[in-house]
Image (cartoon, rainbow, N blue to C red; front, side):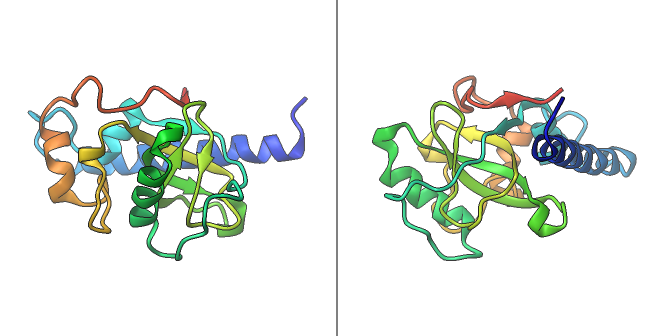
Length: 173
C-alpha cells in the first residue's frame, strides 16, 4: 500500500502528464504547428521523450541561485558541476506548495536521475521533462530551450539527434 506521500506524488505525476496531453490536444484540434514536423509542439516532444526525475534536497555544495531565473540557473549549475555528470533538464515541475499546478521549469539531473534544482527551495514534488546531453543546446542567455519557440523550432521540425537526450529518469506510462 502506498503511503500518503507517494500517493500524492503519483497523483501529481498524473496531473503533469494530463496537463501536457491536454495542451498537445489543443495544438492538434486547432491545427497549430506543421503536421510535417517531427513534433507539432514542445508538448508532443515531451509526451514522446519526457521522463520523471527523482526530487531530492539540493546538495549543500550547490548554491541556491535567484528565483525566477531557472533556465540560467540550471545552465550555470550544469556547467559548474559537469565533471559530476550533471545535465541540464527542462520541462514541468509540480508541487503541493504550488497547489498542484504544473509550471515550466529547468533544473539539473545527475546520472542516476536525481534532481539538483538550484532555483526552488523547497524543491518540487514532481519533475517531468528531458535531460539534454549536448551543452551546445543548453540555453545560456537566460531563456528556455522548450519554452522559446525560436530555439525549439529546429527540435520540433527536424528529428532529434539520437544522442541529444539523456536516458536518465523514468519513462511515463
